[in-house]
Every structure is written in C-alpha cells, then in structure tokens.
Amino acid sequence: MNKPLNNLQIVRQRIEKARIAARRRPGEVSLLAVSKRQTAKQIIVLNELGVYNFGENHLHEALLKQKELKNPDLYWHFIGAIQSNKTRGIAENFQWVQSVDRAKVLQRLARQRPTSLDPLNICLQVNIDLEPQKSGATAEEVLQLAVLAESLDNIKLRGLMAIPILTDDLQQQHDSFRKVRCLFEELKVSGHDLDTLSMGMSADLEIAIAEGSTMVRVGTALMGRRKI
Ligand SMILES: *Cc1c(COP(=O)(O)O)cnc(C)c1O
Image (cartoon, rainbow, N blue to C red; front, side):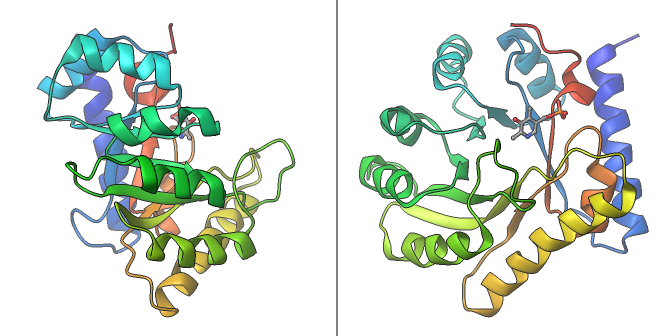
C-alpha cells in the first residue's frame, strides 16, 4: 500500500465531503500540509502527489529542509510562535506567515521582506478562546493589527489563522470556529480585502469547513506521527 497517497486521498475526501455538506463552492477550501518535525523526503513524496503548500513552525528546521529540497515551486507557510529575532529569516525564506500576533513582529516582517520578492502573505493569529498559554491576539487587537498591516509595504494581509480550544464538546468546537469566522467577516465589512480563513487541523477539519474555513492545516492525518 502507498501510505502517503492513501493518506492524501483520505484527507482530500474528508475535505470534499465537508465542503459539499456545507454547500460551499469547489476549490473553496485549500490544503496546507503541516510538515513540522517531518522529513524532507516526505515533503518530496507529497509534492510529487501534487501538494505545494507546506507549513513549518521552527525557522531553523525549515531552513534545513528548504536547503535540502531546493525546490522553487513550493510555498512555505510559517505557522509557529515568532520571536522577534527570527523575523528576518522568516521574511526572507517564506511566502506566508500565518502566526502574526503583535505589531512589532508585523513591522519587522514588512521592513525585512526583500523588495525583490512578492509581498509576504500574512494571516493574523487570533487566540479566539483567550487561552493564556496560547499565542494569538485578542479580537480587539486583531482589528488594530489589520489596520496597521494595510499601512505597511512588502506585505499583503490575507486573513486570519486560529487554533481553537481543545475539547471533545462538539458545540464548543463549532462555537469557537464561528467566532473566528465572525471576526473575519467583521474585518471584511470594515474594508479589508481578505480571502483566507485558516482553521481546522487533522482532528477537526470537518467542523472548521462547516464554519467557513478556506484553508485547513493538516499534519498527522497526512504525514503520520511526527518524527524529528
Ligand atoms: C502542528 C500544527 C498543525 C497540524 O496539526 P495536526 O493535528 O497534526 O494536523 C496545524 N496548525 C498549527 C498551527 C500547528 O502547529
């Protein structure tokens, strides 16, 4: 059995089924393969099966893989907590940053993004359930960060990213995702041109899609247990 192909087919079927159940348009939900703590070899295999977007949460680990892969066709998304001394490496080597949650990081990314490259795609991370141990801005802060983002060069605000509270309570899961969706809609109504609502992972992508996700970030369901 071809494990990566099988995993990919299962994940794509889950996305399609959820998309259809939510009466959403074909192509409205994209897949980000979360390759953190997975090998470069696994990335190659998935890429050969048609996956181009990969998510990493440690700069050093990501740079090692990028160097090994040397594939200019891949899109790299930074999805981890950002220390301000890592912003230059992120601004220079990624196409997307989904975990921006404070002004200092936003300003540094904009300043450090090489002008020779396309604008850096940004999602603001929202800590929707106000969990103290989690990164992410409050809804109030997100509104302010969005205004700041629009004023900066070399970046393009694309939307929001969230990791809702871990719970078995289905209703609470729906509620969390719905709050993120509401904030996303609020930003659009106030004039921001956004197209990306990044929410849903291996365990909860169906619920996220039901609540409006446009990008699911899938690690273990696609690539198996994390290794390195
Ligand atoms: C690890 C991670 C994921 C993927 O989680 P899985 O449960 O393995 O699908 C998604 N988003 C973020 C921000 C992550 O850190």
